[in-house]
Amino acid sequence: MPNLEFTPLVFLISMTAGYLGALTGLGGGVVVTPALTLLLGVDIRYAIGSSLVSVIATSSGALPRSSVKGSPTSA
Image (cartoon, rainbow, N blue to C red):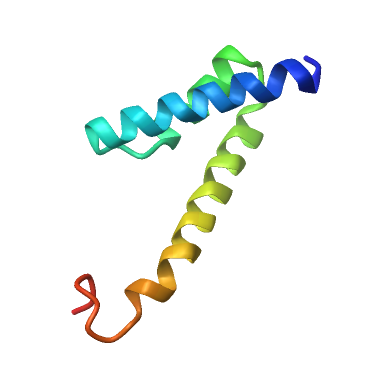
């Protein structure tokens, strides 16, 4: 599948995953990984890897805020 077709599809799937994740409290990988594999034909190993990279990026971005003393999420 050419990049010009693949990129907008992944964007739409990601937006849907974000919406469903916010609505249900589930992580977006629950939607994105099967969608990449079943709908777009991406190898399962690459789909899982992209989900892991996404979680690492999100967690790394949240780390400085949550590690500040007095943060509502710190014990």
